[in-house]
Image 1 (cartoon, protein in one colour):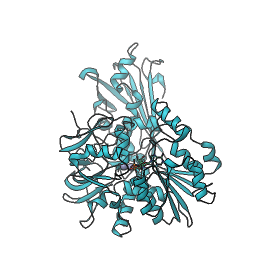
Image 2 (cartoon, chains in turn green, brown):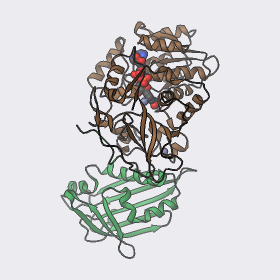
Image 3 (cartoon, protein in one colour):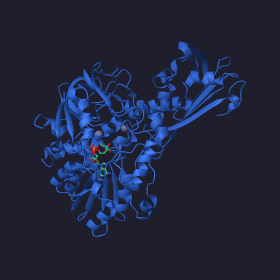
Image 4 (cartoon, rainbow over the protein chains, first blue to last red):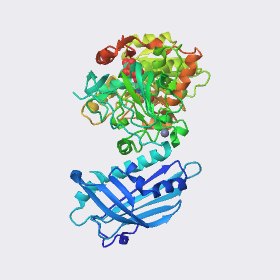
Length: 170
Length: 389
Ligand SMILES: NC(=O)c1ccc[n+]([C@@H]2O[C@H](COP(=O)([O-])OP(=O)(O)OC[C@H]3O[C@@H](n4cnc5c(N)ncnc54)[C@H](O)[C@@H]3O)[C@@H](O)[C@H]2O)c1
Ligand SMILES: [Zn+2]
Ligand SMILES: [Zn+2]
């Protein structure tokens, strides 16, 4: 992805994350699921909601520190069925950000290689705070876990969980 | 309900905890009838497995009756008697489709840590640390079993709990270890460790056509049980030169296949063994490679080294030169249990195996903590403990 595409930023302080996972499903099915932005919170833990806001526009709400929330509008910048979806925050977002997901066929009978790229351009001096806000303390872990959950959902129909199970507490 | 909870090194307690709940659409809850303590649980008991949390419910060998099921559970019904594979598999990923069930991509909710540690994450395992997903285990009166359409197998009432409980881990693990040896007529298979896994590896090696099985341990009571299965026994505590001894017993060639059913916490013997203990104590290495060294040096050229014994981290002084130049094959892994549990069930139905024969103690779940203590301290008399709920 090209840094110039984030309005007003092209700095070394940008945070860029890229991960690839092979999912045993066809590119078209994965594309359809990903195109439904409203389902992102199912596997992206830092998101509260994403809803449509007009043609090629979405409104995002993410968890912030201390129970706060951050909101911004994004535009869909690329959309080729079965191949790619990309989005970018509109001017005025607190944290300019953009993302894309590419779907490429894997070798025979292996499904699709899904590559996600995210870039955040936190305002000067605030890097650590914003990164922590979007990704917890470990951005790499967050995106890895998000993709693992998406893969599990698409392949097995459920996201693995132990939340709410029994435990001793003496 | 009552459950055996982990609190630290050699500190496990039976406690009253909340009953489990259905957490996903394909979960079942079972009321446990029989559960067992595994040699793998001793690694947790010794505090040598990372990412344990206080209060974690242990246990991965268990069976019982379904009391509740999620809306997406297809064939199984409330009231069914089921046995549960110790590793959790999704049934749909690349690995499950190829029956490499313990390598499942989708059942470990904490996969990131293994990805960092091992390059890849493997399947979730009941009661076996948060590295393996943090699932609450089976040494409890009730257990939540996820992905119930894949692993659990329904069993009929004429089969005995004690035989069936051995099919949830111990028997299939010994069986897969022996199958991995690709046994040919005339083959000698050597098995290090005569705990439950070794015992079943010995019996399976004969089932699969081994000419001779040599069993190695340091505990006379367990060697005796191996001898009853037809094995030639070697007491490793009397043998400084285990490798020479095995060469002598095999016409100078070495065993065609060598099974390490001891793992990374081997009792240490000799100078290099002492080196492992010192390094493990100083936390400079995590795993003792003592048995690894013995199997690699003993195995005949172009033979198979089969490792059911558990390793968790880094091992030091592994004879790579011998492994490479002798053209050995290594086969290992957590057991692909969703497959091999069914192999075991068929063998049991056909009357070919009697897995309960290795059980030495039957205790109540209330005495589970004491069970850990005696299994750890008195290997001579205690070979396998089952707990009744
Ligand atoms: N691969 C799997 O899926 C899987 C499943 C279950 C168990 N395991 C592992 O298999 C191993 C054995 O399990 P178990 O239930 O039989 O455990 P166990 O602790 O009952 O048996 C281990 C045996 O090794 C013997 N031993 C120790 N040091 C030795 C030495 N230096 N030389 C020869 N023998 C020695 C002990 O006396 C004991 O009899 C463990 O590491 C366990 O974690 C692996
Ligand atoms: Zn086990
Ligand atoms: Zn799977």
